[in-house]
Length: 141
Image (cartoon, rainbow, N blue to C red; front, side, top):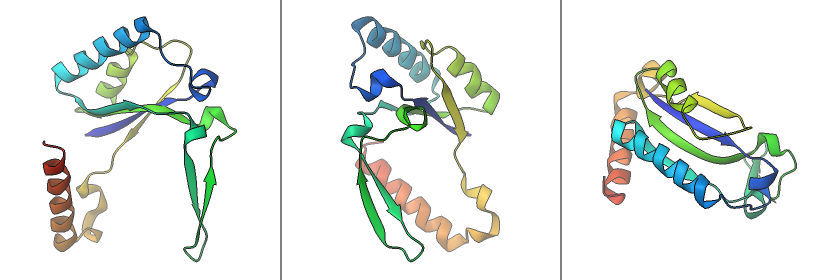
């Protein structure tokens, strides 16, 4: 099972406050533990929403771009991991070891092909697999 682990933004991350050397060392050691265990697929920090944009789509498919920053800090994302583990409980146990203080982490399961049932036809499954292989080849995986 794959899980997206979402690190929520706060005033510091939204103001562009960079982690200290100690915080970077702690996070690096934690990430190394995830990699050694074979559960980390990806993980990155994100720039503040002031450097971002949102694209809103209307009912007809038209779009509007809204530049950051965005007001509701508690609804913003400061970083993420993509973990592959055997269960939600295992993911929770890994995240409880993260070197965070005074924050909240959200864990969301990523859909697998099987979750879509018959709607994901063999033809669509084949196209999905081809796209995954192309991405993996581009990333050197």
